[in-house]
Length: 339
Ligand SMILES: Cc1cc2nc3c(=O)[nH]c(=O)nc-3n(C[C@H](O)[C@H](O)[C@H](O)COP(=O)(O)O)c2cc1C
Image (cartoon, helix red, strand yellow):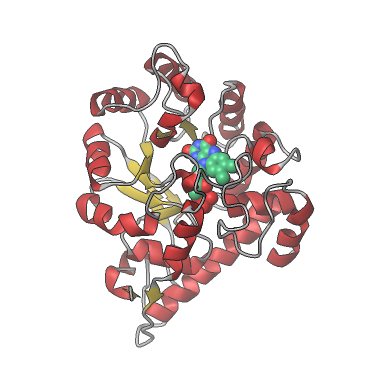
């Protein structure tokens, strides 16, 4: 099947809230939670998407004619593209009953691996969700990144023990999940983490650790101080806090402060290869994509992810060729024009 066929097939699979829009731009779902939307007032996902579209790419075709190299290295491994699958949790609640998290992750983890990239998986209230994801990752040599919620230390360590026992490649924490009610109800306390606490968690991990949910220079500096191998510049797609800037707006200053000290990922509204190019030009090393991958998996299973990745990496390569960038390092700030 081609991209359009798979995308169309998702229409009656993705539940009552997602409208399977031609481009996932955060508008039709706005503030639907449950659903794929955002917290009140519901405009963060749309802002994420819109701000990438404002950035123009600068063509330069007086360059050697070579196939662009889009391979991306992280944590001692090389990936086929600078794209990781973003963690998505409670998929049945937000997108309808076709899959529960373990089934969705089962498809995602293997499909991402087969395409040469890697899946980050979501955490949930039910510990069995991460256990099941870890089992799937173990079958492909541990290649996956479970994202742990900012539970209290004891619980985070328990989860990390599972990753260590199964030699999982890397771990992540969505620190911006700190405000979630089920965390606040925990005893001892869960929620936001001090630099000291993060340091302890990262030291205990003994593997590359990504902090997801960084939206300020100060936050990025603290993540580096805590020893994060990577940060994700992310506002969680607008799901944890209303009224934030878009990720495209905060990325340049964050990159200015920490580029080269940690790997910089960014997510939120990145939909095409042109968007990936824009994100890298603004200082990201790689991107995460969430919602559109889900639609493609709901529409076409593993093939959905593969076809979508082929589409966007083709667009990225074509943009690199048109803008005179032979590899990812060559996608510099001067390759874009911000009106
Ligand atoms: C339904 C849904 C569930 C999500 N669950 C998680 C989660 O469990 N952990 C996490 O770190 N991020 C979660 N996210 C946030 C995504 O990982 C990502 O940061 C966000 O969707 C922005 O990327 P996108 O615009 O490409 O979707 C979720 C997002 C959605 C829409």
